[in-house]
Image (cartoon, rainbow, N blue to C red):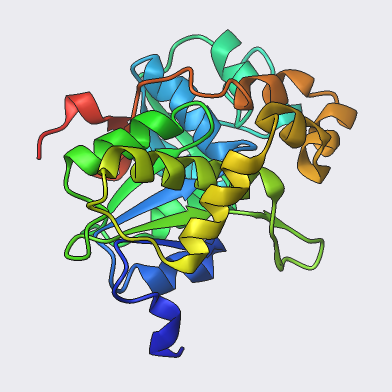
Amino acid sequence: MREDFLQSGYGVRFEWGPAGARHLAREVSCLVVVDVLSFTTSVSVAVEAGARVFPYPWRDGTAAAFAERQDARLAVGRRAVGPDTPWSLSPAALRRAPFAARLVLPSPNGSAISAAADDRTRVVAACLRNATAVGAWLTEQGYGAAERPVGVIAAGERWPDGSLRPALEDLLGAGAVVASLDIHGSGRTSFSPEAGTVATAFTASPDVAADVLASASGRELVDGGFPEDVAIATEVEVSAVVPVRVDGAFVAAADTTG
């Protein structure tokens, strides 16, 4: 991979998907993962409630074994929710489910990116609900300057062949984080053209919630019977909680040090 693609020299950078995250992780001090529908939105809901959320890249038999090792509850697919398995990647299901102090959230997109990041790299979960809080916290921690660059990763979705499908909701969520970094950085941050462009896309939208609802991913969830998940994901700027990965799990930044 060419060194040009690292967006070197900029304090705030933007990329897509697991491959983009792996590439930027070579140089950045912090990765911000954005998976609006629904991993990082679900993380925000669970962490707000006080849970520790463990990301896991696969929803298969190994996920159950991983959850057992972590002494955690395992989230299932949206349609597998039942009395014995009330926890799901659905943020609406998480709000209804009994509180789980430790929860494993498997997902091939945002969760896979979060789980694969090197332990030396700080990982933050962002969505439309907490983008302003994430940008403010990153600035307070000194991220976004050239010497402590941050990579904002739009997780995207998957085409049937497994390839990356860029998703509007994640572009807008990433743009919201970058726009917040611009506001809170007060000129101390520098933005790659890629990062600056997604911020412009976010600020140019007259109605972000309506755009997400009408997007391909939003329509897919609504048509599939999960409109409440889209409604929760588009609660723009309602949360001050910043989920940060510590010892393999997302916890509220207020519960961490450094």
